[in-house]
Image (cartoon, rainbow, N blue to C red; front, top):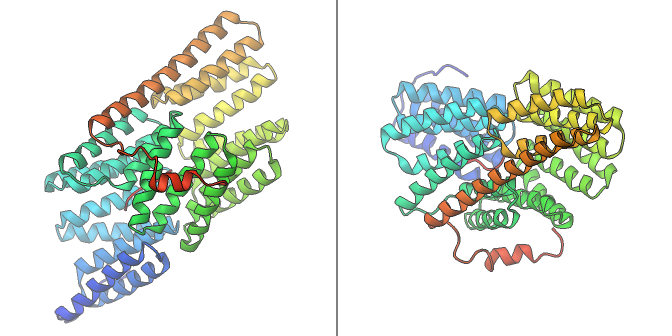
Length: 450
């Protein structure tokens, strides 16, 4: 970033920078390109004036715009400049916003551990200021990072703490929290509960005319329909989300939709369409250096070719995905690819090799208390033992499979009870209004607040 050149200025000059920043922030809801243009104009003027406060805000706005357009490297550069300025000004309020923004971009890069570190630092600053309303937002964001990292219990603790703050301050719950809670229910298999939360989020994004976040929520609904095996609705919602996303140039979000469309078509056994969408997602993920999603998509392709009985291609995709995940220490996708390779070797009754991959996956999943992954691993262990006639070991592994499923259900019930105690669930339970409008259609890592 350029060095600040200080000249004489008056209050009118400062107000011009402030106005540009306000316009940039407002434009971001509907025109991200305009927001970035306004932010860069504000940066230029603030640098000439030596107006550090206005410059810090302009850097932050520019960083957010870059993140939304998946230019993560530029986003980090802008955020770090903003953070340096805010700290030099001892501006704790804006320092907290910048720390949250930095955490968000590392979340987008699937570096969940680093994201959590920045969220932790942000919470510490907010607690020193007593800004508990924004702390609720950051807790929501941190919860999503824990969720994507596979630690559902830590995720729920953050969400419930956030809910408690909203409740104690009598504030309306932010749509990001509805989206994130929906994802929890989706991951634990409670699809109707997930839909209720997503539709609640949809109402809020539409009422606030926040088209970008509306598109994310539509994509979440589409993804839910994939799990519910309603692929027609899934494709409609995902396609609707994609139309919105294309207007804003959020390549990462578009790629996620392509990946989910690939999954929907794969489930429908329309393999040529699935391959087309997965390859498009893979291309875009590589272009924006979203390495974790590259690994994830390679794993999806491995599963697709497994379904096609093309085991040679399946194995290669899994191995490539495993190599990428290990390279970036992406534990989540490392578990998935190990599990995929194990399933492949079970198919050919090579229980010894399958066991190596399963033990690797199990160790990583246990480190994150990921019951969903552990349930799947135990089921594959059971299948492997059955294939070679070890009935007792197969039975024990199957019992562990069901035990992990019970733990997932207990987590979901715990969350539901706490949500009701906090007065969080919608009174109408999604039976009218927008819920009816969207669910009655004949066709049809993730929300973060900046």
